[in-house]
Length: 335
Image 1 (tube, one colour):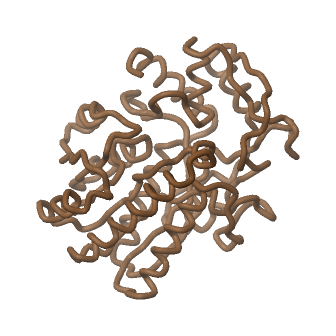
Image 2: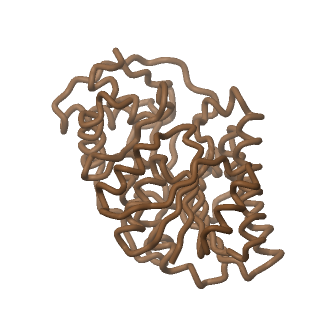
Image 3: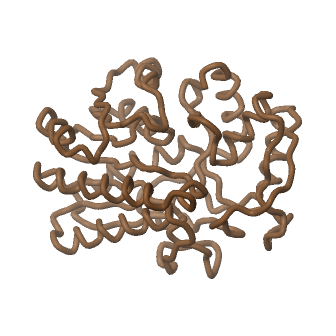
């Protein structure tokens, strides 16, 4: 089976590509390298011993995207490509709506034209906004608190309407919680360009001495220690969920929605303390003002995904901290 992975050189896309290749799939990657590096392609080959076909294009470039479908008989798409920083989306909403929505529409139109009607979409727990109850089930009300989350919800709605108009599609929406960690080879991991927007890559850059201290955004939330609580999931577990979704839903001709998380919750300071303990390092941090759009707590009820996709997260918060740090050490001079 040929699988097109959009955003395949990115953090989650690269790990999912590794799992696909290791399980016999042929992978084609489309990425504009806006937040990743071409060398990831070589690292994927080093890990798996297999090659991927790579196209450096923007999904909004219809002519170039069509060429990908003409050159390759694509059976399914896993759609990761998109801008993903909450804070940046609040400052630059038009950029997020333009990039994330238009690229997804262009992708779906091209898929339809070339009769490829199987897609797994990389959504987010941000579609739940500030949840009314925890843990969060797939039936929870959706409403967003920032433009990034709004783009994810809008794309979900676009895909849902597409399915209603033509139920020969197989559409799976995976609502991620908070991916962290790295592949056990430490060749791929989270290594954003510029200043990181997420907690773990910023934390590891403090641990390696690149940054002086970690900014903790708010300590007055209604949580165990006043800092925000999140459901952290190891990126390899997350990648495997994509594989399971592809295996089990490829011929389903249904619209399916799954929360992808562990069902456990850790605060920012709990994560920092765990990181310090397992890696035997000291993390300097300071409390600063909250970020616009952030919420107190967010964690999943993952029971539906466990039951229907046949997989349960195997890695712990300790594994996430160890793997993130080892990846950072292994790639300290490649930022």
